[in-house]
Length: 123
Image (tube, rainbow, N blue to C red; front, top):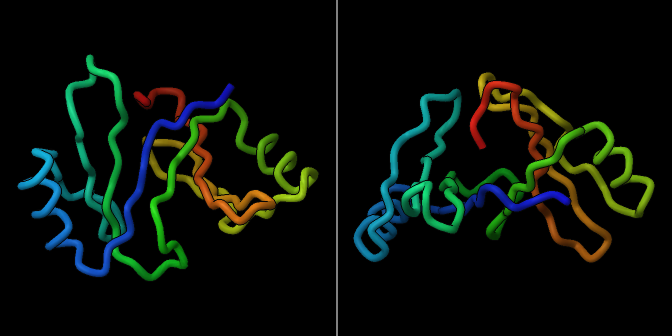
């Protein structure tokens, strides 16, 4: 089975969204040091149930919450997506030190990410 390991919230105002979640829910939010604006969200201690996520600027075609699922073999999942009526909407790309990421859409219209973790990455 594949588990949801990360969520992403698109925002039209990332500064306001970050402040809101920090103030209302007590989440810890820090900037990612990657090539685009992306704010990492820690929702609680790793020893507690739940997942962490991110906030990013609205505008890349995603308009709602996107969940990211951990998979063992991203190429296999992408092939099975198309074979089963789904669509790859963003081909796999590498996030250095993190893993391979792609976004797919299932036949009912839901979009989610699939992530094959890098061998040394903690998920």
